[in-house]
Length: 293
Image (cartoon, rainbow, N blue to C red; front, side, top):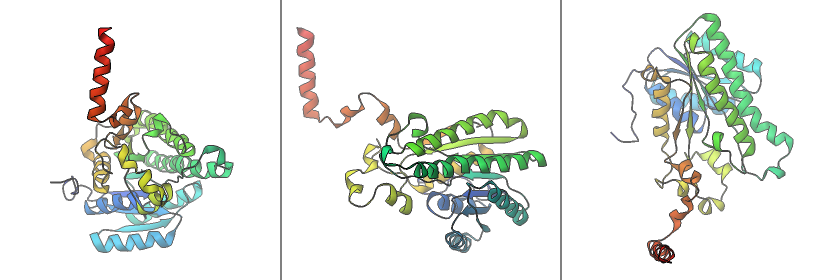
């Protein structure tokens, strides 16, 4: 068994239907593939139907599972309701919602227009609460229990981060929703959890966040104590576990999967990681000298 292999047993999601927003590309596509391998039916959504359908066709051929591609702008509640209706019509029910759709870019905040700020917040926060509200209301009305919501957040949802302020604001809101609804909706048999990933390179998003010539200079994996980026399967294993019955007693939690990145950045003296052994010898000599005075 390696970190590149699936963790759960074959057939774990037989008879289950899962909706993954932003499921046509990146981590959303990777999670969709693994859910299919475990036996689930999956609905993927985004604004680009052509991309979605290409992914759906590819993954159905690869896994033999069933994928429904639904064009949906999660910022618009009516479109979310239509996506839910399409999912129920196709598969008869929905067991899990994965709020994965996101938008982000790096910029000094003073360079942002209010429209740019709105774009990120609307996709991440409004999109997540639109989907969660629509699906939650449906499950509660139908008195369906054993349902799960999984939100993809980030570690700077609780620390904040410069240069991605709209995303930090939005992800913090999603995290607050996760913890709040975990308490409020538990009585309806709905569990709500979140994952906070560190660096998991994806072709589109990664290229936009850290473009071209800056990628080597600003290599984010250098901030990770394990000195590597995450493998998609590692996140997929965690996501599958959190929406499965195996995690039935986990509710309202956010699980960090970042190789220790945020802890390294949080410690006041963590910058001393760059000190060489020779420099440590010099520091120890100076410290001993100060103690003897």
